[in-house]
Amino acid sequence: MIKLSRRLQSIADRVTHGSRIADIGSDHALLPVYLVQSGKCPSAIAGELNKGPWQAAVKGVAEAGLRHAIDVRHGDGMSVLQAGEADTVTIAGMGGSLMSMILETGWLEGKLAGVQELVLQPNVGEDIVRRWLVERGYALQHETIMEEDGRIYEVLHAAVLAEADAHNESLYDPSFLPLHFTEQEGKELLYAMGPLLLREPSEWLIRKWELELEKLGRICGQMSQSDTPEAREKEAAFRREMSAIREVLGCLPTVRPSSN
Image (cartoon, rainbow, N blue to C red):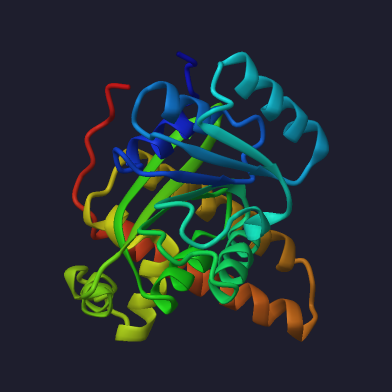
């Protein structure tokens, strides 16, 4: 059986046993191969737009002896999927804006009909993906944050629930944090930092936002060299953002270092 990276393994761990998956932007189809080899999924669709990775996926699936169970398809986003073909959709390794566009196109075209869960790993723009999930009535079930090769990643697992609206309203209620913000400001922070990640903070969550503070500090330092009103305004906005992040981090419970 192939061995996945920590990032891909975190995605695989969230896929429901027995589900048919469609991996959009599958690259070399490592995730579908692993899920079928391990017996977790009976079948898979691996969709890939770029010709080189698509050819590598076709070869890898054939070498694994899984052409009967994994259909490697060449196409853009959700164009490779038909309604009712998958129970789970996985998308990983792209920005949250692009990921949300792919999901929205699939939603509008009916490609997500019958899909019961989404396992998503945006490289950036996680807040955009969380907003899309809420807008389209998916209930966030789990959030995972980890480090791999010097980068920090988040994996979001969302499912179709009859009571999704009530679930999301409770999930994005910021009252569990003792913050000095309006309710809307608190919600914005939950979208950005992760409502479940903040409820069970880890060392990697803290590290991610410490790095963000360092980046924003550098930007503010550069902007302070300019005398334009626009620069002053942007610097003030960034400093307000930094203050909000510090306040959130300051009210989280102490995190024990990971043994990993």
